[in-house]
Length: 56
Image (cartoon, rainbow, N blue to C red):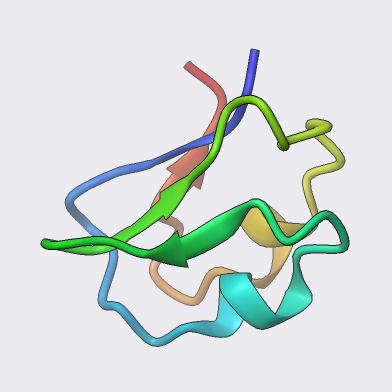
């Protein structure tokens, strides 16, 4: 299962630049993770300042 970004996201972009797979992009309301590209490495969750990224 891919990581998810909750509504707690502050759209800082830290996760996008740190994702080794390029699976994160800016969405309409906040950043989003492409489930087909996410390898569940957890890098995004470890750098998120608002702790908005988690496994479902």
